[in-house]
Amino acid sequence: MAASDSARVGIIGGSGFYELLDDAREVTIETPFGAPSDSYFLGEIGGVPVAFLARHARGHRIPPSEVNFRANIWGMKKLGVEYVLSATAVGSLREDFKPLDIVVPDQLFDRTKARPSTFFGDGVAAHIGFADPFCAYVSQQVVDAGRALGATVHAGGTYVCMEGPQFSTRAESNVYRQLGFDVIGMTNLQEAKLAREAELCYATMALVTDYDVWHESEEDVSREQIFDNVRRNVEMAQAIVRRVVPELDPARDCECRHAAEFAIFTQPDQISGAARERLDLLIGKYIR
Image 1 (cartoon, helix red, strand yellow):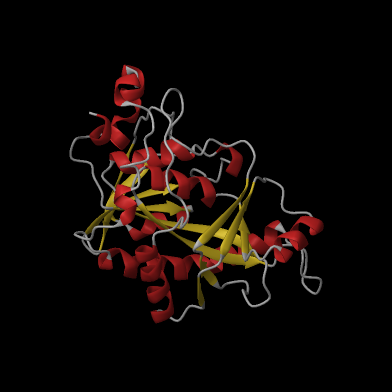
Image 2: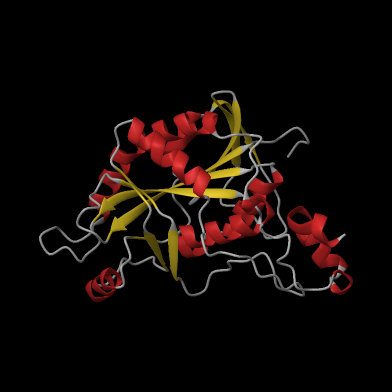
């Protein structure tokens, strides 16, 4: 990574987003948390410097439980990213959230089991506020752009994040519906938590591909169905990104940007040199 490599907006999604970038170049980043999913691609959209990362790597080689979310988000922070737009495939748990609709969730529910979802620990205790896990400003930009482009966009909803890689059982799917959840996926919980710890403004475009397995009158979720709907969703998601990126205010302040300010409980003189080095990019300004 060269000193000049930087971006204002980060995009995390599938490989269909590569083509959005003008003058794209590939950058490899080393992190204290291991290797990111893939190289970052730096370029521009509407004159705005952007970094793109394929969440599951090129060729979709990394399953959800093996994605190194910490490295992925740390890399975005290292590049100077302030806003992160995530695109992700989800199953719908509601009749009125139809395949090919887009949901911009405002809540998360965690059903993962064994994934690192914090930069802290190893001698540093920090507790980040996460009551509202998505940036309201960026989420509204996505909603407005999608509707202006003619997409069916649902503003708000709860995304339940399951471990996977298997899809839900019918019993699980029905319980999630009874609990009032709206869409189900396998990736966004850790991204959102880590983006908040890194003080990045994060929002998700949840692209509905299927009705999970609860919908008795629909075919059970299948690989072929999901891949077909993902392909059909990509064009609209790309159009939304093209519209949103130039509209994000580079001078805007946000609560997301100060999330860690009062979250570190460990006294600075008790933080080891190794921990300081590992976390300097994230909280160095608060523990010096």
